[in-house]
Amino acid sequence: MKLYTGDLSPFSAKVRMQIYAKGIEGIAFERPPGFPTEAWRTVSPLGRIPVLELAPGDVIAESEVICEYLEEVYPTPRLLGAAPRESAAIRVLAHLADIYLLNNMFMLAGQTRASTRSEAVRDLLAGQVARGVGALEAMIDGEGGFAICGRLTLADCSLVPALFMIENVLPATEAPDPIPGSPKVRAYWAAIQAEPSAARIVEEMTRGLAERRQLIREMAAKASAA
Image (cartoon, rainbow, N blue to C red):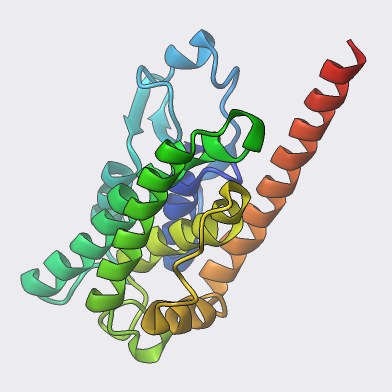
């Protein structure tokens, strides 16, 4: 199998964290060829990552679907609940991270340059992120340094990339970071980064962010020299 992924892609990071936590072997990580050009769409019609390639021409797109597939194929250690109600609670937190945090952070990434920023758009999206962190504050239990169930779950796999993006990208928009003002989320974020699979994801995303910033600097230098 092959996972098309990228260090900074938070949805890819979610899948990688699950793979690390489960100790799954035999999945090669590759950067997508030609991403994000039309050539990539011959592999993934959605034109996004991650994509799990089971065999040439047989691919699964969308991080949530990939995670569910891997959970079924590699059931231990289990990253869903011991009972349906527990699994539902885990899925709600993972959905919160994907939809209410990461989707808004993706759109906020376009508001990092002051010269092209729309403060109205920035404030709207940052408000949605703060609202999501507020919901997370009310929903996680933080037991044992995990989001829920006192052990690593798919909720953590989604939350780690989401909180990384908030902490590292939101300040560039000059919007306030809601994590420090949310005691349970703040404590959880500090604790989960010590978990080995989470620490590996934070390291990879930090590397990816540094590469992205270097690329932006090089592009700006070329533009100013032209």
